[in-house]
Length: 548
Image 1 (cartoon, rainbow, N blue to C red):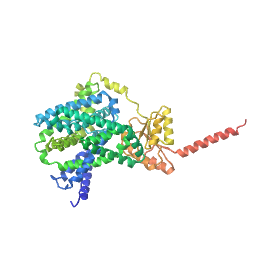
Image 2 (cartoon, rainbow, N blue to C red):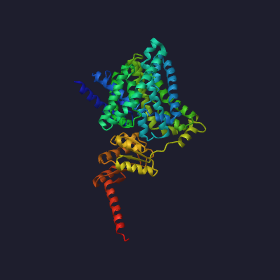
Image 3 (cartoon, rainbow, N blue to C red):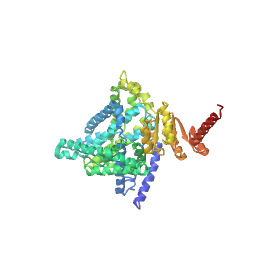
Image 4 (cartoon, rainbow, N blue to C red):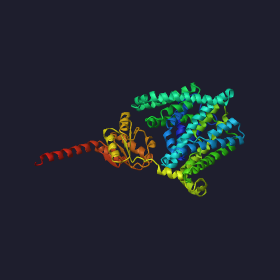
């Protein structure tokens, strides 16, 4: 390599090529990136020499990842799912850590390494599972919502685990009590500062930056990285600071828009984390790890789903729901690797632990992808032997079906004069409607009238992934820009929307373009308004000319 720029450009090209192969094989891109790092690292072709720039980009990528996880920490979902999300999430964490720790000791690990590995085995990839469920159109299903619920519980556990391990060094001098007291004190101080910022500072700042898409993206990254840096200065890890930064914005009405804008940035920066990870791995780290990796992989692939099925069956869910939800924890996540990497940087464990967890990640992520994608076929083959995981009367699932919240039948994009009035009329006629707009003033105005509305940008290709599309019959865009409407139609179809689409057009040429793009119904606001006005005037004139 003749320079850092050429080196990075070659790595990006290699990642794109092997990533395309991974997509053809229906594998997550995480695996492709790690493979590229291994091939380009010292044990492979030796391309990578600029370790410092890659390491910096990797650290920023991890901070943005934790920020987006905190941003998506929907406590309302956990509260709505109630007992099953908490019981399944906490139960899976407890039993996985317990059995994983015992397995680690049986495999010859010391206590601290066994704890790190056991905790790493509990984290499942929210990113991968949400993507797979979204591709299968199962995100709004009962097992999909339950899975997302206990994955959120796992995300909370990430915060606690990282804080615990980052302060574990204190236990050597002050004991466990001092460590726990320090964690509690840090949490209390962080909680007070965040509460004050969330109440008095952030709402005004967000209202200001929300008027510009570019400024909102810049603010989100700056806020996440700043709190990550501040967290490290105050004795937290960067990861914890970034997580808390995202959590502080999780109740904001702009969070979905920020998340949609951040996702491509997050994915791009995480590329460098996995490239850097692969480049730093050495085959010596895998030596003697094959047996341990296979044992732990089998535990994750079989044991974790069994734990979830047992808990959900006991709580009164059908065996199919438990099976489908259980498959979502049959892998470890990028957080597992980040967590053990943090342990290596703290000096708690050696590089062999990171190599082992990475190897388990490669195996479980690969196999779990196929399990989730073929879950129905797999269930049909195994359902006769899964009766032990179902009560005679699955009472809680019956209750969940009866209490399911009504989903919108119509989504209106654009809440200006035309769109806002249209939404209000539909709602007054008893049609459950959801409004979406990128103008903060329009969102506040519509919400003030008691209507269901979200802040979101129709130009964001990932926006439909955050919308409840399961029972939507009509998606209506009142936006004037034909290019935006075409992109919205494409994004809706790509995210599995099967209902009908209506859009506004300003000319006959726009009408032709939008029909070709897939719109079933075209509105002509100005033409329709002129026709209505003409008809009303004609009616008034006829009445005035009528004989007395």
